[in-house]
Length: 145
Ligand SMILES: Cc1cc2nc3c(=O)[nH]c(=O)nc-3n(C[C@H](O)[C@H](O)[C@H](O)COP(=O)(O)O)c2cc1C
Image (cartoon, rainbow, N blue to C red; front, side, top):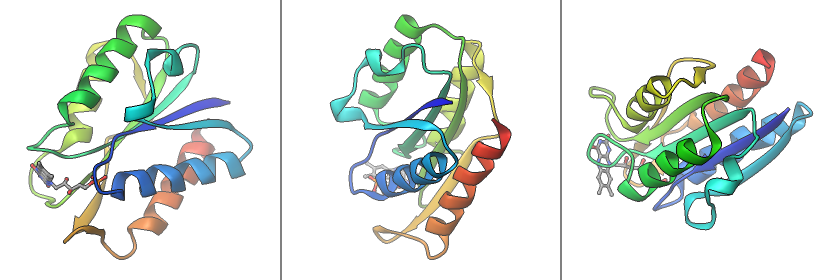
């Protein structure tokens, strides 16, 4: 299946998770495009059946620039897509970027493959074990296709 893994990142943690998910999806035989917000546009989303969307959590939500890209993509590429939203965050207690992105996509009529996923950052690094969890998520997504 063609899959877009689209992510934003400031210090690289969300990028690392996105790349590991993408690696597992490729290993399962999918055609994966893994793109960073700063170098992507609405055209990357067009005609791709599954979007895997990853964002750092900034004040409980995705960075404004990433939200803008996602909203523009929805406008141009329509809602006939499945999606998975994940985020990175410091705290487990409140909702993060993935919850907001998930809500937006569902509201727009896209089909969620699973509940929002999150990965924990401590200091400025991924918590131990999160990289393996990212690989597991990639394999789980592949098993659902
Ligand atoms: C401006 C800013 C706001 C943040 N707000 C939150 C927040 O509301 N909740 C949280 O859990 N983490 C918050 N964080 C921590 C980020 O989620 C964490 O640094 C992020 O996962 C790093 O991802 P990246 O390495 O891909 O940039 C914030 C970080 C920054 C820089």
